[in-house]
Image (cartoon, rainbow, N blue to C red):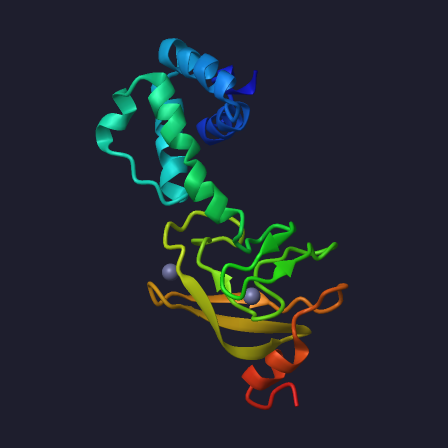
Length: 189
Ligand SMILES: [Zn+2]
Ligand SMILES: [Zn+2]
């Protein structure tokens, strides 16, 4: 199993372990495995993963019994929230801000809601890295044209960070054109 392979990055092993541990039965079995065979790097990766999902585990969590650490690292209640988040991956989601169901784009990443254009501050430095623990609402502030791209400029309502996402247009459910025009202060006519 990939979580046993210490040559893989710890974050990948942690993700595989968490994915495998979703059933209660498996949680017990895999928690026992973590208890007896889990190394420090894997434990740390589980703590880091939980932090990315908004669950701050205490420092002593590294020494917790395997089952307890794994259960907390699963962070189910937070994950349920994260699944409603538009991220720089192409998947269906329910917009956390306007509540509309958003279908996957089909050929590009969907990182904001096409209806209200809002997004969530989940990325840190690289689009899709999901490394930010902010989880604040990204409000569209402006729409600009960069070369051939139409770009939405965001500000995070929680931490103030500025972010940019490409508008998603040539797909079945594109960004609301009228909303883009309203934001664009004349650039889009
Ligand atoms: Zn929305
Ligand atoms: Zn933020």
